[in-house]
Picture: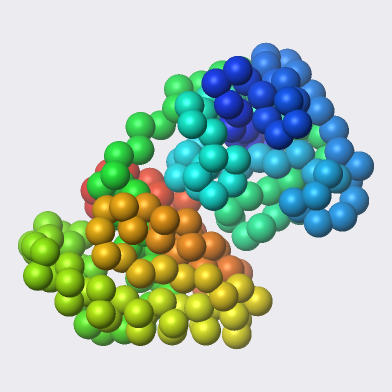
Length: 205
């Protein structure tokens, strides 16, 4: 068994009213696709669980649990599936601010983006050198090209075609999820680690 993480709603429940808590186990059939009924979903990193909540379960007031299970199927580093998963104990939910989401989005996109003008803007945003509206507007134009390139690259190399553009904090929050998926799709053989990216985003590095 390895340590994993499970996100639930405020009542400790997941899809279909499945109740979780200390020492609670649930099992699937171990068959079919990851998003089917055969697998119990979990995460390998607590930050990824929180950052991707809006496009997965979208719990308004989530709770995070340390869990144990054997990974049998993965969606890159985005999400994993176990035939049986046991929640061990509840742990504090990482505090993820809008700035962290934006930073995570940008850093993920940089792993799959070859657009020089967009990357130049990204470097200045991350360093704090320039976060002005004018720079943001210029980046928005470059982002369309960047997103198209990232989607094409991901599709060619890993069968994924998701990328993102960054126009504002609100747009960047949605972009983080698409960018993380594109980066994860290229992780095998490319040394990309979105767990490390998430940690760096939180540290402001």
